[in-house]
Amino acid sequence: MVVYLNGTYVEQEKACISVWDHGLLYGDGVFEGIRAYNGKIFKLREHLVRMYKSAHSLQIKMEMPIEEMEKVILQTCSQNGLKDYYIRVIISRGTGDLGIDPRKCKSSPTVIVIADKITLYPEHMYETGLTIITASTQKLPAAVFSAQIKSLNYLPNIKAKIEAINAGADEALMLTSEGYATECTTENIFIVNGNTLSTPPIHLGLLEGVTRNTVMELAKNEGIEVCEKIFTTHDIYTADECFVTGTGAELLPVRIIDGRAIGDGKPGPVTKKLLNIYRKFVSENGTPF
Ligand code: PMP
Image 1 (tube, rainbow, N blue to C red):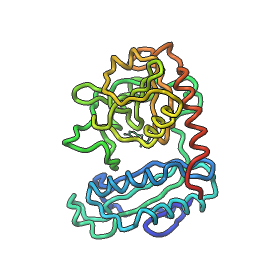
Image 2 (cartoon, protein in one colour):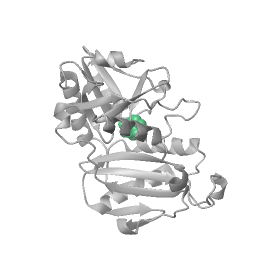
Image 3 (tube, rainbow, N blue to C red):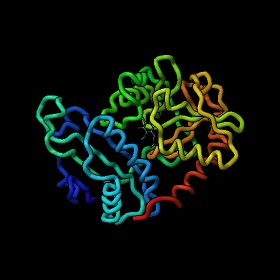
């Protein structure tokens, strides 16, 4: 695989960064995960706008305009000769010294674009559904860190994922300190009741997922009612259906949470319908490379 690294395209074995890079030393940076289907990058601009906002919020100064970044990503894809990719874009504050002081990162930010593959969950799980648990690890309050900043520090999410793995589950749901459902470790969450889709509002402290927004639009176009509302685990236990969304996971049914079967414990009709519509939509829409 050819990787873009700080202005040049290099073979992956040669894509090396400094051990003084603050992305490595302190998680001081931001990233995006983007998918390409069928020779087209899905929602490229939306992902980059989110990443540039994350960088701006952390005062990481991006010299490369967003249009240029788009070109770099398209070129990384075309150079690698595939049609489907999972693309990882990483921006770190750059190389500094061993202290956290960001002013010591005198170089430009480190910019990396990797176009590779990802399989988060095996295909059969899209037919059977995930088992999830509620993690004891909570989302960080907004006063500590905004959930909209997709930073290189995923430790609370990783801790929640470890809880899931230790419990023999596939994924973990994270709650606010008040006990409201926010999102899973790398996916947003939805419940279905009748013809209504509900997902927690962004202000609760969850990432505004590109997939979440896409699925909400697609559902509305299908005449499904979509509402953003606060809910608890009880509401998930008693919902007709539940699914999670993310760039990597796409739209994945949930069959069990905390030992309770959701509905009849199988992916429901609304979830299945939306998964089909989503897959068709992503294969037909995007920026070609
Ligand atoms: N929440 C978190 C914490 C995530 O890391 C992700 C993956 N980016 C999502 C939700 C889903 O976001 P998207 O649909 O934009 O991939």
